[in-house]
View (cartoon, rainbow, N blue to C red):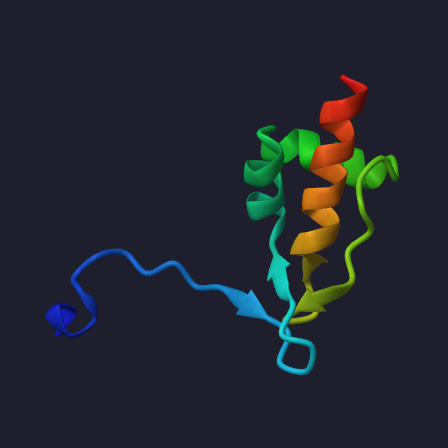
Length: 79
């Protein structure tokens, strides 16, 4: 059965059905920013990172990829 999809681990991508915009989880945001997940969550709690735009399953916050990448880029300029 695993040969049907290549046998490797799957990496799901969350995309908004209406806009086609890719949405990121906290873990993906932290990875894009090159920081620990706890640091990302602290930045979000302190409002030093983009605000989540929606929640998956009513619990998991999601961010627009473009907003996160812009935030990462702006941090690189400041540092």
